[in-house]
Length: 415
Image (cartoon, rainbow, N blue to C red; front, side, top):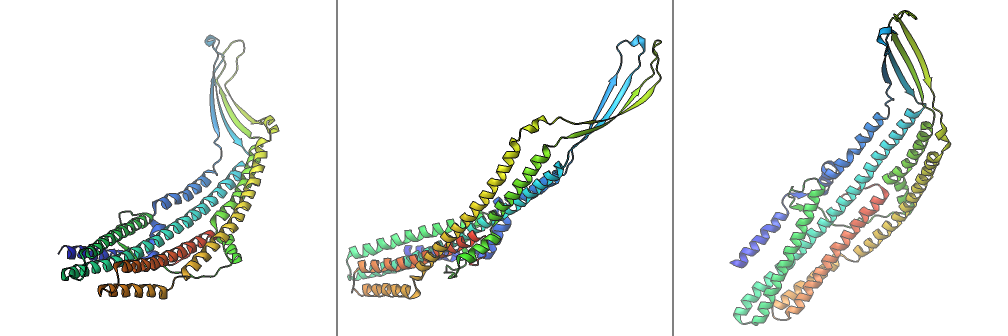
């Protein structure tokens, strides 16, 4: 009864694995729409747009008011009130500042594309890892079933006196160990599902299973083809190129800010009547207009201009270095992809079928007393290794394929 109960519980757990299943397309759509880190990153775009809007603001005018009087009140020298409005005027600074903010907004948008590309690649690799964990748990479950059947059969054979107690205990121990391996594989699979829910923005979603198959994409690519795609779509390369434009606009802003800032002022003074007997004067209103020009002695120091010019050169070199790095990454990713393809092709359905045929033959012979348990365990281990290695080879092939697409900047996959 106890064995029956344990088997029933395990069967129910297997069935639960295929409830609330998740496929790749809804998963990746949820990552793009609900991942909190990506949602936070998206705010950089409206922030940069707001800063661009702020860059259009002109300098505020200043208003000053002055009251004047004489300390000799008895002489009645009169009083005065002066009002003045001054407006600083810059030449080309606002337009240069707007261009800087515009380039920064473009870089923010491109950086967001780069963030999304890396996020989708990481999420896709996690989905492949979950598929691998699922397949490994299924392999472990099949092994447990085989060992459990052997243990049950050996219990009956021991009662009949066909085998010794040691053989019966050995198969029971092997069944318990297979059970623990299976439970560990299920726990690893469940942890992978939790990771997928985290990527999808809801770690408490409770995904119980995923659908999809590990496979070999088996696509052919050339370096020239991949490089052309990367030059067109790779967002970090676009960002590096935009950084050159940003450095150039910042250099223009530095030059514009070195131009003298002119201040134009208009004033009005209201003077009361002077009733002094020696120098009387009537009440009157006066007007003033002025212009203020600073003496740009500080412009003799050209350090900021030199720094801005060096920043342009630095951005250009960084863009060139990134392009070279891109070619290197494509070559390495393509090599890894070809190696993973070769590894996957070494395992075939025929090889797995032969290993399973050998295992079933060993089990049948053991049940008839024609072979030893050691040979059964060796055949089981060989069969497990073939299936595991095949699943891992397909997983590595799909992971290399995802990485290859990521380095080109165009991640379009279906699982």
